[in-house]
Length: 136
Image (cartoon, rainbow, N blue to C red; front, side, top):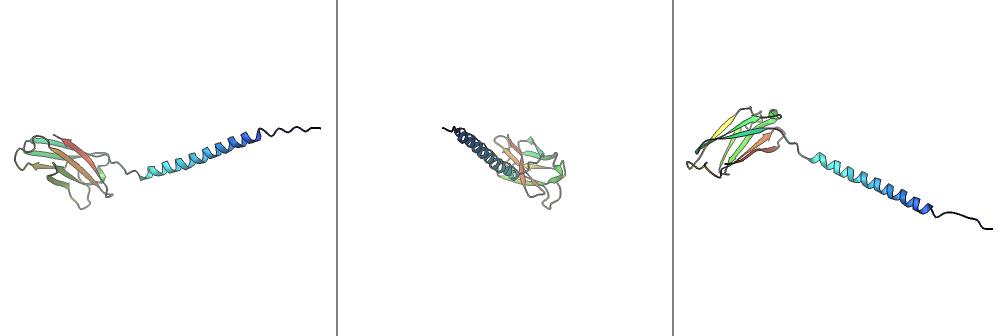
């Protein structure tokens, strides 16, 4: 008498179950890592500034506000890395929309070409963000 036993299918079924379990565990670990990284992305504020060249000796930078205008304390303006100024105060109060500063070239007529204007907004939470980067 012979007894017939079919144990050949047990090994492939266990293998498939183990592969699916490993895939689910890996997906959970990777997604936890990826979604955990999203919390460290800094907030991007929506504010802006405009630049106007009055003549070859004068440029004006004006704060125009935006969605997050209520959290801007001041603007730091740099022109050609030589001229620097601040629009607003550093006392932590909110910068008013429409504030502007006019910069005068020294030597005269130096704002004609290759002028680089950068305005950086500083916020109540201590962060800062470039809101104007302009080349003449």
